[in-house]
Image 1 (cartoon, rainbow, N blue to C red):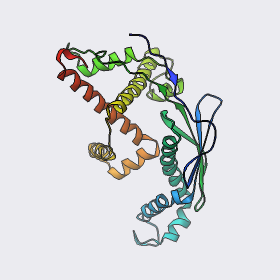
Image 2 (cartoon, rainbow, N blue to C red; image 1 turned 90 degrees about the vertical axis):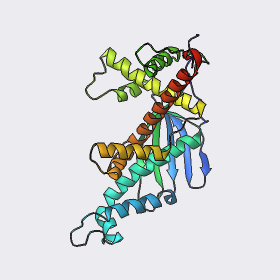
Image 3 (cartoon, rainbow, N blue to C red; image 1 turned 120 degrees about the vertical axis):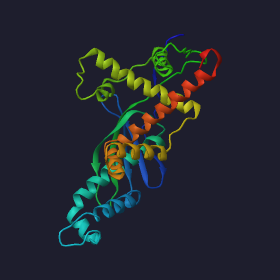
Image 4 (cartoon, rainbow, N blue to C red; image 1 turned 30 degrees about the vertical axis):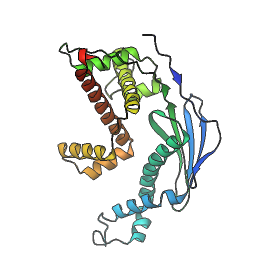
Length: 275
């Protein structure tokens, strides 16, 4: 099969994008070649998040008040900085994903949020930087021939996909994929991290083509499972994942699992092991 040319996906012309009344998006690029979305959203987009965060803090123990009986005004006065920090984290990741979708762009990896402006009752402003998704051309039917040789069909299918679908992942994305104890100068560790990123992107593209989806309920089920495994509160684990973009990463991992399961089933159901 011919090698696959990697072409950067299209990005809208640099101009304001306003697809809903309370949100404005201005796309641009930075000096490193990353795409940037400058986002501004009215307070109405944040109000429900703000109230949820205040309600959560109201359940904490505040000296001089019964637990759960702290007036909202007291919570806001004493914990305003923490409330706004939490609001900025939650809203920026949610609105960043919305902006990405509404601008017609697709990110390779998580969004990098910066230039944050967030105050009660005022519009939120921030920038979301990301590497654009390369154009991934999938192999045709029959290209993923896999036969059970004892190594496992999923591993064979994964290796075959990496062989057939060739594109380069930006160094920053590979570096972020490295484990904490891995040295970026270790060629084997670097290649393994690059392959993990490439395989995830390929599987996401296959999932989109085949209509494979992972619901928020699937994500919540896995969070509850992991919380039970590590003796943690599911709500607390979910909040931690949301702060660092881990929830989306978990969703991507579940999608990759489902896609590999689909490809494995196709291989075993097709005579001769052809996917």
